[in-house]
Length: 383
Ligand SMILES: [Mn+2]
Image (cartoon, rainbow, N blue to C red):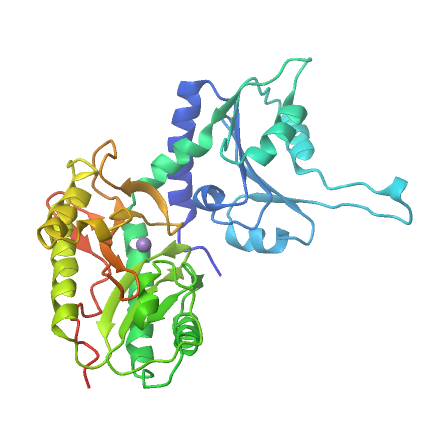
């Protein structure tokens, strides 16, 4: 698929990274396959993205293992490195992307005295150090990965639009799958159908494996769909999201199949109010921990604070879980353009769980909800 984020936006992102490189006196940055690479180059199908401070970025790929895809997806130069195996072990010549990167930089007269890398990718650091050692001196490695992850927290309007598209596809798929709910249908059957529909409606992929849980299985916050059959009166929880042009959305809804009893209604009301109170406290400039505290206050009133056993939310973008984390004790402030989830939940063993989640963008004076399309009424499934 053609990249929806164009070269202009990629160059703007790289320009910002180059500002950091200049400040930190970094001559070149290396990114491995992953979301940081995608954010800067438009592809995750290469093995290495090299960004010299002076000159054009380029991608290196193992021949036949992504080069054709990377060429389609990224506006940057792609070089394929081809291994050779021969007829005996001695003839084997591995494709070494790091060595090739070093050679190209030498050809371009880029002297690497300080190198930016993704420090969280620990398995690659040793090899990078070895290849970029110069004159028996090791090259200092700086954490470009963390810097790019900080950049990724603040979304452009274009990125917000793509997250919204992902949310729309997800919502439409859920509307259609809800019609398939009937006594005896399994969690697995519904989850398969939901995932099929998301792809069918234009999702490039799933943001994460969908959670469909019936009855007491709603207790498992990360439930994996089973052969559990739907019965009248069951809690029904969906936690799902599509990916569109690389961007994720994340929504959770909990309903009752049939008529909810008083106990469910009361508990549901607590979670719904906790969610709306969390949402209400979101705007640019408020401490990151405030929405979490706002939600917990409501659950305390309902004597359910002890059952809210995870954080209120997380950043959403190229990854379904990214910075920042919305949790009591978190440092820093919410900033305009951050996209985060608000998802209080309660979990009562043997009974079940209730969680309500939306993906929202932080605006100057409010949270703009991107996952608006599906009802939050407990009796939405009543027939
Ligand atoms: Mn979530």
